[in-house]
Image 1 (cartoon, one colour):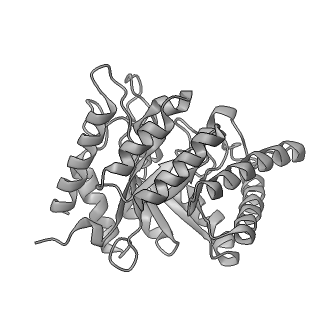
Image 2 (cartoon, helix red, strand yellow; image 1 turned 90 degrees about the vertical axis):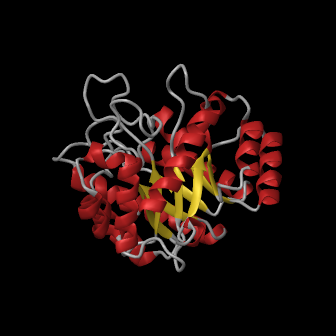
Image 3 (tube, one colour; image 1 turned 60 degrees about the vertical axis):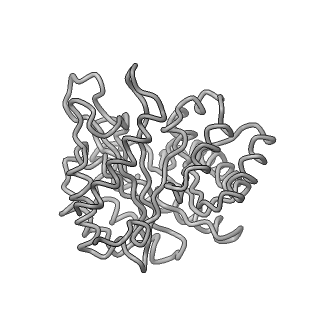
Length: 303
């Protein structure tokens, strides 16, 4: 019999995707409580909490639940189109101050990890310059978290030319940018997202070995790479949605790649967090979460 998946990983759920109403300021604590009460999840990934009273309630709940916490800056960065490698120095300073406030909030919520993303890819002519600026930004944020606590910064890899159109980007680019940061900081790692491989036109079997020497966390989920589909792009639909690119067999194969490279196991037990959300009229958060847990269990049993 295969060992329990909990011996190999810490399954998690991205709160603000599973319950998208929190992005509009509704039900943050109430929906977070549902995740904390479900002992399937050992990790929760949260976004900003504007109300300080709700933030305090959330922190106490997370502590009581004995659940690991990661803080995502994407809900702050994406709506404002923030670019940490903007070519204007004043704009970079503005972005830094906003992201630093996110890190401060992560400390207040008891998070051990903060997810960071790059900005838009500027195109081939200015890409090298953007990468150098982004490396400097990552040095700065890792220095800040090292000075203030034990938070680990994880760089999330996005699509390069489809939806988010991020600098990071292809796994080779992620490695190139991450190497100097990792060499200078022990509180830095990479987050690989299963749902982004089709959008990057990369195969986990080829891409994962490029970053296997870094501290790694993982997202799992689905996407639609077919142009013209009503869910085209990086919308994080449920597993098995018609026209989607990821289902049980793809997660099974992903687990196999991670096992092959010893990236999940008793010595690592990384975060493997589901980033899925209800998108269709018949879908609810509860249905999509149940779908996800079934897929995780079956994929692990078959891996």
